[in-house]
Length: 398
View (cartoon, rainbow, N blue to C red):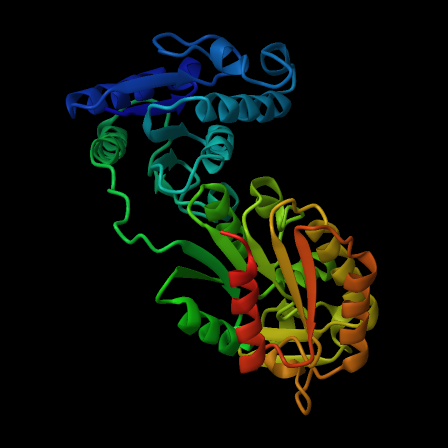
């Protein structure tokens, strides 16, 4: 049976952590209590802090020898990540803590595969939890009262969390019996026709997972890729890159495409919706951009047309990342437009801006046996482009 790993600072939360362990054991599940305290050794942990700290790339002294608490917590998070990734008997991870321990434990949780249960009981779980959760299946549970001693409320909350973790560890979800390979695809409203056509062509032979390219969508797709849950990617919509480089509300991280670089998964991609930067309602557009070409997509979303200069930077960012991919790559350029509103007669139609994008990709492209740049004189939402995407995916050796 896989075990519940209970993580916290034993020097300050020892009673709460030991109570959680008792509940897990009472539920018939094995438990491992891990101390991640950085100020002193707590009592009762199965894995003391010094043993966890030893998993830091620079050794335990990089964690326990710090005088600044913030530096020590960040270092312990890195050490805990290495420790948890080294284990092969984790059935669930249960964390307990306030702001510092929540940041520490969830950083390590985010490095674990999708599908492995992760539950964090936290004093900050009723606020904005996006920085703690990211693109992961990480559950945040509000502690209601501070985790500062056991009482009638904290016993109920921690006990429920411990039973939940024990149940998840004891009852893992069986692997899918669907033997179709899984493919990740990115989509935006303005590339939906393309993605829909590709899904229809591949749906009988592949299980297609579509991710809305809203910043976390691309991260979620790449997290699944790195978790071994995808067999390939058709990254039609790379619109999160403009938001990263120009300052929109749906940005990628600097690690966009990183999972493909690291795993070598088969990759087919394009430049869908890179003609736009996303903002909220019209009145939220930053003052510096209010005289730009704007399009009100709906009451909550305002789009800004990218300029030739911006498209040059966007293309350079994308091609630099593509050049690092060692797996099979096919990257397609739709020369008649990259989104529904970039077509002839539409508000973002701008051949000069598109030409700057395509030129930057062509100029930066490094030829290699595993990578092919494909240009097709059609619009991204045309049947011809969708068919070329599918043909390019099938062209990749199994």
